Length: 222
Image (cartoon, rainbow, N blue to C red; front, side):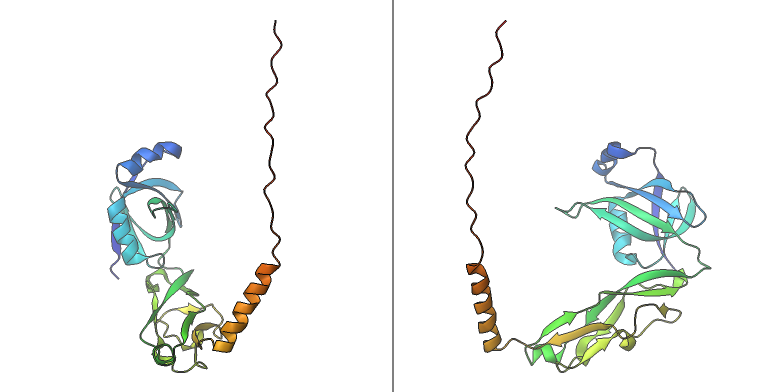
């Protein structure tokens, strides 16, 4: 199986000193896991984003550190909450001959007639499932066709998913993945509005307490 390859370099800078690496277009990272001690590394930011888009967090990629290739999973990505700027990444080294547990994202596709024709609202109750398999059997995501949701009674469950070969699903097979809620009736909307208005009338209004300035104590003259 062909993996995405990402080049990396070892690093000695740590703490706030890694800001200089980020300014130079690098992402400070660490590799840990099977058969290795934690190793501080850096990867090119643009190359990392490309690899992350391709592999996600559920597909093995080859991390090339100074010519030595390590099979890894991207296990954690830290980003700036304001602009999604990647600040750090963790790579988990895996043993390709031993099964591991991982979470596979669920991706909805297609058109539901219960949404399109009946005006319902699509509800995704489960965004990922837990599986156990050999690392090379992992996939980026599992696609689910929501065209099966024709009425408001229809439900897609984990048991309905098409699971790739070699995977054992650990998530409860009866768990709902997707369904469609019917639109609210005019009576329900009116009742909801009345309930909100009633709750607002009970809210206690707090007035801001004015705090008088305190005069600073004058120091004693010597």
